[in-house]
Image (cartoon, rainbow, N blue to C red; front, side, top):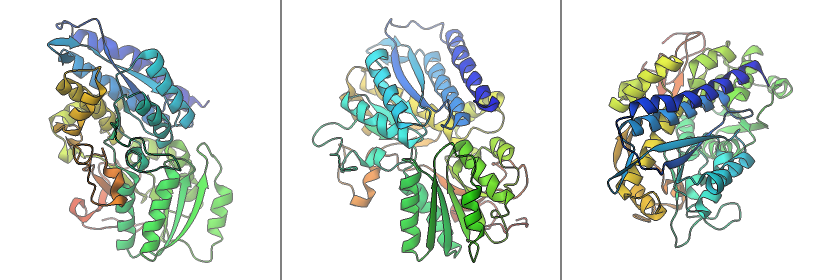
Length: 444
């Protein structure tokens, strides 16, 4: 294990130990029932998962629980119940997601599951939480089938539900929502030769397939390479890219965490992208500017997809959480801090509205009708058993899917630049520098 990963894991452990202390002093004026309401919180705290994001996700869970408990917890029939989030390390792996779900349900007796990051863990986990009727609110995983699988067949298996209740919800965007923005940007630039570098996971493969379909439908040539998470040496593949008769117009990286950073830096070192010939379109984790520049010092002019609200749109809840984030971590709270925080608050709010933590069907009904403002914006769900008529089969992912996550394309144009100072270049409605791309070596 590297010193960097060990450092993050130690930080996570310290935060887990310290978080209850803050909650104790904040809620000592409250009288709580003996029974605690418990959520399982998913976070990748070990490799090959994105450990840098994982410790922040856990921090966000504990902040949300502390805030709820400071307000005397969750009121059930006039009795206050303390909330506890039990964070589990998914490692970004499907088998770990399955093991976590089984432990939370069979040993910890959780009343809900929140958060996430990697689609592989979420897809494995949700089959178990559905079977055991555990309300599950994912915030982070993008695979379409996390929500679409509620109503359509998935990989030869029957749907999660036919006439019963679907317990799975999501507040982060589906791949289809993100990749549509990416494809629209590439085609608007008039590019016609794209390379996609993807991780061989339940996030990367479907995302690459969807991106390829959209681009090819627009007449764009697409070449694709896939890698296992944890790969360190990309030079053999990158040498094949260098040997092409003509350089690609853009290289789209769909590889998360440290693996994606390594790939992007090696592309830059070899002069492939970012360059005057080829656009570097990095994975969305590039939005963590501190980690990006530490790992990809040659990544100036890389673009990346950013999901989530920006400080200009922060409301009271986001502003308050961001101040705490800045004090602990520096910089501005990213979507993977705001999303898990909101997932805890949203599920807790649904339990409060349902006035029960033991009737999962009532909690699902409360989520389907919910309308509440939190850090990332106003949450509601257009489609579910309350409104089952989706407008198109291709939009099946909108089932129990929050429809309003903000997705933008952002580009660095100065070395060491904060992601907040980088240019929002697409869609035009969010543009900050009057251009949809900053040419390599220039300034806006």
